[in-house]
Length: 348
Figure 1 (spheres, rainbow, N blue to C red):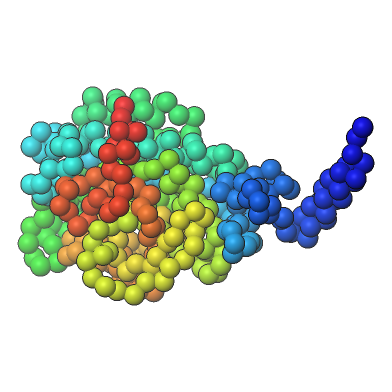
Figure 2 (cartoon, rainbow, N blue to C red):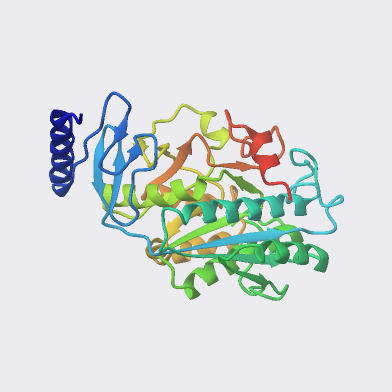
């Protein structure tokens, strides 16, 4: 015999859930942490791209700054003349695991592809494009990069830089009057190319990325959700960095702590030249950003740091990417991070 009382109770519960949802609220079952209205657990991703960001127990943030398009520009350098291609740009130090540079480039690109593909589960209508700006790579290395890009259905493109590009813009001497190396000139040329592309591409958000940042699978999802949420809350455009750099802990400085989608984010006043920002912000600081590739400052990121005195720049805790530098570099490997796991997950 059916329990009529139980059936009535279930019917009444479902009705209450529907009514509450119409007013923009959700019921959480404290006994099992389930949300019956949407058949999810509170540990699942509850945010809806372009609509609302949900953080338990802080509630909902309405999205006012929806991201419709996202362009990632990876600056690729796989030179053949740098000590079997293992040392870092303009340095004599080898990177962690001591592989040729192409290995870090390929793992970076693979991790970005994986992370972008994962983000499409939540940002289904988002237009994502990955552009590789390559300087001086061999045909063999370029073929490896192309094969990797061909493995995804995402929009991709390789742009090969010419050595003569921007030669009239790049100063041959640094801010102190010293000659800059050919490798640094190449680096600056690639930065200028990235900025030029950001002016040509019609995209809401741009990710300027060096080719030695290996990302977690959820990195792009967290970056996108966090940008939508925090730019809506603060009512302003932002800079986001993917890495929790070790040098950020070398001094005791004040930071604001904000809640992103699934991570904490803190305000920082410095970063390397790997960051996410909007087309509007690029246009606002176009001359400053271009100057990074025109005149070698010390530090190279000086103009970026000056921008961060006026704008929010945020870094994730824990890190969303491993900057694969020398193990002793204060600008490299993020602390309290499973470097080996991320490295092995992106093996080709």
